[in-house]
Length: 405
Image 1 (cartoon, rainbow, N blue to C red):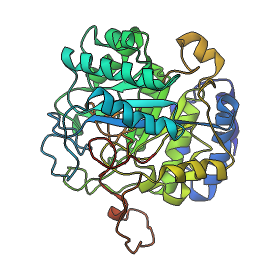
Image 2 (tube, rainbow, N blue to C red):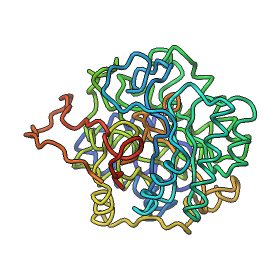
Image 3 (cartoon, rainbow, N blue to C red):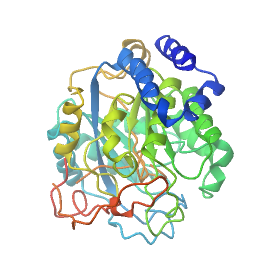
Image 4 (tube, one colour):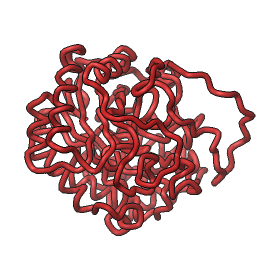
């Protein structure tokens, strides 16, 4: 396809595609899907080789958020049966983080539900960052705490944070349809505050909320303009008890097209496969590794992911390798400009908060496996609700059970 040849050439030159080209990727047929994946895979390998960065979520404070983000199980008015607990102590968070690092994660993402941190909360998280850094040499720490006030990003940086996650989630034009308690501009402002403080900015999106192709292209181009180092791509987990519980709009093929489009628009950025991959990509997750260079290991903020060992096996079986603690994540030209991408910097997995479910709309990871009841798994059809794949997290941070890492 001439389109794909053009997009590969642009991606190898770090040149932006046009909006029309990005929309055309989303409009490709299933017959063309493997060609799309192969083309975007060339761009991914040019800038990131066959390395996969592992990230690990620690949900510092779960549930009871005053914001009304429609996608989030921790939102105001949510009746989802998720874990609810107040702040973890620094030593508890450090122990949870250590499990992820032992499983191969080089970045720990600290997420807390809420509109944004108070100064006291920043003090608390600063102590947690210090505890994690003391116990895990070389680990990157990304904070995801919601909307930041003046000076808070600087304080987190001084405490040792490497990155800050705050996702745009959807296009500016439709943002008011998913959240009314804060604005799209508030989110952009927080990403800019993180940038200005010298933190590696991490900001991404959630697909599957009923948005149009135009909305997806709008938000990805807006992210390119913001220029974060990390772009987590989340796929909506439709929790019962939330306004978007009936939104089952994604197929594995649709998810792969969205990831490919994101890679073409953001060729040299850490594109992270975040919340919802197990629910919507299912057995096609390995193909996504040809498009992304980063994933979350194990569980998310309020939902369970697949077993940590299964993640590691998937990476190896697909012919990729886990990125080591001493390896540079970002290409040299980005690392030199931002001061990050060596052994510290990127976050985001939404369920939706650090890219999965917290911090005013942030994803999540925590959690060895608690046994699930075996259920008969139906064959997946386009648009079919796969509620059997949505499992509330009952292990890891905030529980007495070992985490899944």
